[in-house]
Image 1 (spheres, helix red, strand yellow):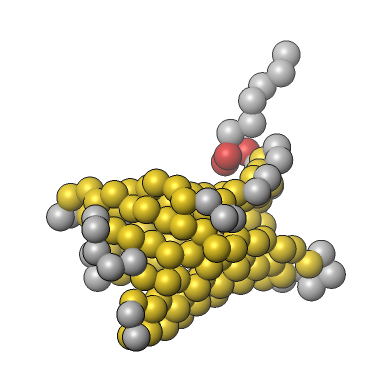
Image 2 (image 1 turned 60 degrees about the vertical axis):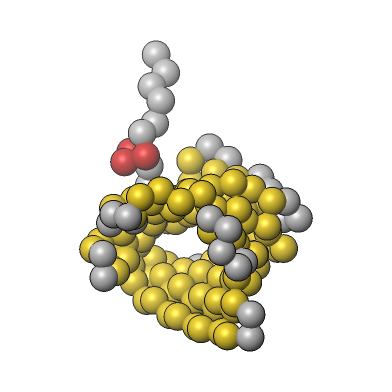
Length: 150
């Protein structure tokens, strides 16, 4: 008998996560950095990175899923968000907070994931333009690095 593996049954590896975000709207730029801890694991042909972050609104659980040529960013908790990155494509997503749900339009310039088995480090590099409900689009540079904890 074959039993399907649930996410909690998979071998998870603890990682230290560093998220760097640079947002440029017009001539204004802002940069953010978050350091937190999470887990990484593989399920079939998909790679997952999960971590928690705290915001003014409360706790947010983030899952980054990498499969084939796409990266999916899911946030749940105080903020719910679904954003899909496919290099050279425009995709739809949504952002939901206590104020309601807003549609997102994401045009991905580049989206890469790499893993170094020697150093046990990985990184996501995503560059995209995002527009939320008709507002002026912003240019986003997202670098998400993670390293296995000893």
